[in-house]
Amino acid sequence: MKGYVIALDQGTTSSRAIIFDQRGNIVSQAQCPFEQHYPKPGWVEHDPMDIVGTQFHALGAAFEKSGLSAADLEAIGITNQRETAIVWDRDTGEPVYNAIVWQCRRTAPMIRRLEQEGLSDTIRRTTGLVPDPYFSGTKIRWILDNVPGAREKAQAGRLLFGTVDSWLIWNLTGEHVTDPSNASRTMLFDIRKLCWDEQLCRVLGIPMVMLPRVVPNSGRFGTVKRGIPGLERLEGIPICGAAGDQQAALLGQGCILPGQGKNTYGTGCFTLMNVGDTVPESAGGLLTSVGWQAGGAVSYAVEGSVFNAGSSIQWLRDELGLISTAHECDILAASVPDTGGVYMVSAFTGLGAPWWDPYARGSLSGITRGTRREHICRAVLEGIAYQVADLLEAMETEGGHRLDVLRVDGGASVSDILMQFQADILQKPIDRPQTVETTALGAAFLAGLSAGVWTDMAQVRDLRVTQRRFEPAMEPERAARLMAGWHRAVERARGWATE
Image (cartoon, rainbow, N blue to C red; front, side):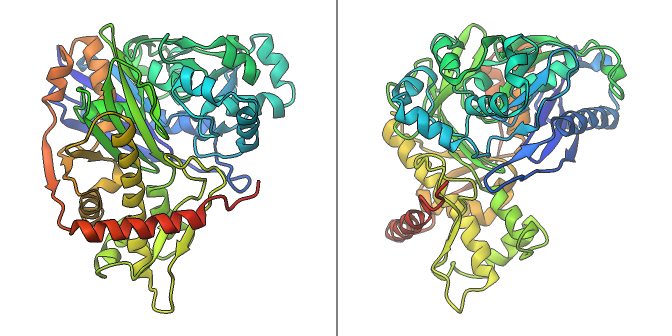
């Protein structure tokens, strides 16, 4: 047994493929960005064919770079941007509409109607979620209601729905399947019974024949089929693991025990805590999802989400032109001792936990004539940390555990200034791992556990190595004052949009 595993990491702005060896080291990797589409304010879409094309290209490139043969590869694991909804034709494989991305807020009026109909408690009790446009359910309904002929085709069994994992697996293997972690982000899945919920599908008008079969996260999803251009040498390799990106990162960070938690700094920020094999009775403004199902056991996670984190740095670069690279944001932010009283609330597509306000919009508060781009860059970084602090406060209050240390990963976790400020504002240590590609690593672990590369969860946990630990250096009183100012800024951003 050679022990190499490929992880496909399909993200919001790019598709990546990473090959890991048996010690969790990266052998090779490749990445392909793809276009974002914003048809209307608050709407976000992807071309599903761009997702497949870039992911397949990254997979082929990583394999070629590795110098390995197909016989060296034990399995493929998949991790993906969650909640993004794709509907395609069962016979042709063609999408009937663009992928509606997790960030998209177009279904806010639909969510408001569900709340007015008194369904919030049912949704919370069954799915562990709160009614919000974030999740896949209302996105599917929107496609069925707005694409001519879609509802009739769906009722006839001619259309399939999938989150991005399902879409990739379908194109790789021809199988229509998903995993419990992604299913639990649709607002259609009973997280205790681990099955699709008939009542919620009926309420949302979604024919259950559209929905994929649910397979354990560490299990058999199919094998790479014959004739995929550029991937001919990978024919027959099994897909043995799949998980939503944040649950995969929780495992990749070695958080296999209740009370352990992590935050991923990506396009958005996602804080998750392992809560073991029991669904919490109440998680307040937090969400409860399936973390993973493996070896006959289920682990649950409570979660809070920041919709815009790394995307706010991209906004500085691409829309405002204040920086030319993400690293320049760090350099400019570090050149001033503070923000000069400026707060940036990056609610470009609403606020997630613990606020759950789809009508919030981004704001810059506290600007004076002396405000410079350095202050704005620092305010953007600090705004990310403030939102994570809000999540952790809710998590500790409602989740039943206190985090001793926050494990971090994702693109923005390489920012030392952001990580130090995060430790300061949380008054907790921050632990950054040697391998920050923990999302892909978690997918590789799930696939490798099923394929026999690793024997159990304890073995994969022990592969994690700390690269740097950031200790709090700010006085608690100052941290409290800064958080109070942040909450004033949040109140000014909330409820801004009228539709």
